[in-house]
Image (tube, rainbow, N blue to C red):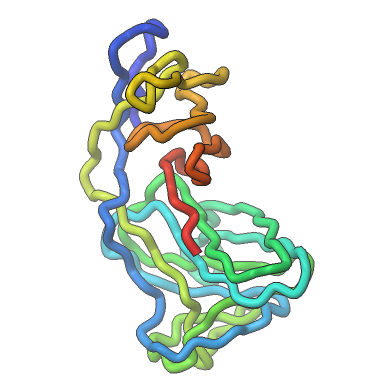
Length: 218
């Protein structure tokens, strides 16, 4: 990602070259019969991305207690190369969607894996799927495929504006605040702008690792 040079807090605009999501995705199953599978050690799914991609969504099922999982992205089930890793704390209520966002990767073969760190975690699986790309504790299984989505981004880079401290948002009602040169947005919504991971928005959304605004749908 190429970042434009910020020369002054009052300059008109700064652009970065990025690959935003294009509203297309790959589902890692092709069936309709869903079930809850409790993760003993780990569950994974192999997939082939046909475009650049920058986010993976995994549907969590029953969670019997506050729990923690580790999600990793690899080149293959052999895990010769690890691209990304993140830990998530899950509420006891369960039934949420995990979003793992990252700097986009090129089309190719990949493998994501979710490892139970603590607690009791169920994951949504599709038992009549015929892809047979799922893994249980590092071993392939034909019992199901996991309900997850690989979110594609544009293959060509596009320019997007960066939010800088002092920029006005919400039609001038408020400004970007915080001490980040890429802006820390604590109120309002800045459409298609970039901010820091972890920043919260007034509509309940949150900036994730990839620094793009994502709705945390369930």
